[in-house]
Structure formats: structure tokens, C-alpha cells
Length: 103
Image 1 (cartoon, rainbow, N blue to C red):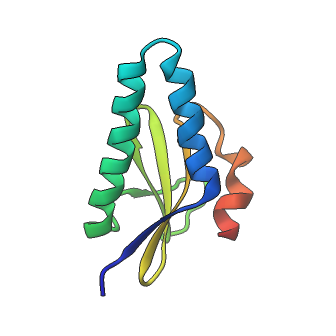
Image 2: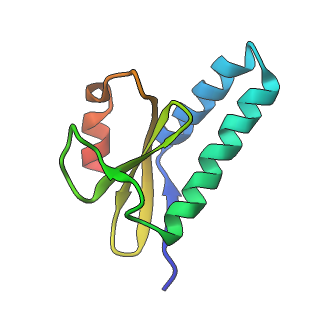
């Protein structure tokens, strides 16, 4: 059975916010960053444990992979990958921690 990729509303909102912010300086770079985020997500479908365990959570089912300076955080279930957040590497995870662990 193929693993399904799902996106939480929060993760999609994060991507939209990132694109809007970058677009102020460079619409081309904004599109490139968004494209790369979705491209990395597709790679994770085949290599679910490619990302490292999120250090703040220490849960082997919650992992992250970096896309430029952004943390693409996802949760592994038996037949799906749920992308729960996309945050800048310098932002604190504690603002998203509750939504990540509840999904």
C-alpha cells in the first residue's frame, strides 16, 4: 500500500506565510522555496525516515528535514505522512509543539 501524504491546515498556512514574506523581495525565489518544500515532501514518501528526529520532542515518529532555512516537520503513521508544520530554523518550536503532538 502506498503511503499517503497529507498536509495539516497549519502547515499549509505556514507555507503561505513564508511565500508571502519572501514574495515582498523576490516572487521568483518565493515560488522556488514553495516548489522545493513540496518536492522534498515527495521524497519523504519513499524515504520516511530520511529526516532527523525533532530534537525538542525526541519522538521517533515526528521528524524534520530542512528545506533551505525552513524545518519541514512531519509525523509518520503506518500508512501516511502528515506534514504538521513548516517553520524557520531560527523560530522556536514551542509555539507549534501542541499542534504537532496532537495530530
